[in-house]
Length: 304
Ligand code: ATP
Ligand code: RIB
Image (cartoon, rainbow, N blue to C red):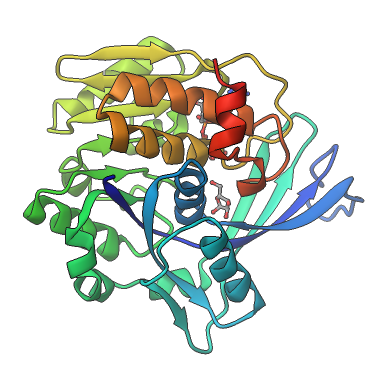
């Protein structure tokens, strides 16, 4: 089975649920709270791992209780942790998350140890990375490391998937366009192209603008509207399942984790999108990020 390398962030998520988001200067009582392992990189790795993929995680955790918990979590989910480093004297990445009664979230991240994932790690993990068939990246680590990983993938003929989240205009689109897969949500696509993404037609045009700049495959996640694939010769919209959403945090990560697991077996983008769409739709019906991701057995029982 093709090995997948996720080079990305690990956070501890501190999640509060509230009917109404407090205004500036206001204090409110949360309706619920939990801590859970998160971070976009870790979430994507864990989703793929839960589904049975062969995943290697390249990340930096803090030398605190959150870091220990994250390491245990990787191991419980069968993820290769040889390149999970612990930064001495540095706190783990943390995400403070507020989820409102409409299931929308607001997230504040503190990078912590994720800032220590410098380009040198790509050199240190180079031999192991060369054994991988896909490299998966997001933007919660230094941009220089993202660029080094893209260059490594290109130089070694390893396809690279970039999830440009959280979106930053500092991202070099020249580098991003070297990727084989670019997977933004609608908002990220708008920020990174400077084009409107309010309708399917606008999303298609914005995605096409990246394809015209050399990006092979742009896959846009569109929340309850599903996902869209645009390439030079392909256009596909996969609808999301109609579900009662309670918490959409990490839906995009579950989509990507499932997409890469399926793609690593089938090499079919439409098939991987269809599975990922169902998998992510299930994830929004349960609270939490990784806690809401189904295992292979659970998913096989529920999927159509
Ligand atoms: P996040 O940043 O919270 O991880 P995202 O904005 O990156 O999420 P979305 O586009 O919201 O990602 O969602 C990813 C996928 O999850 C969608 O393509 C869809 O398949 C599924 N999904 C998200 N929200 C819903 C919903 N309300 N109903 C059904 N499916 C959903
Ligand atoms: O995409 C969801 C993730 O974003 C959360 O797990 C949180 O850690 C933030 O990084």
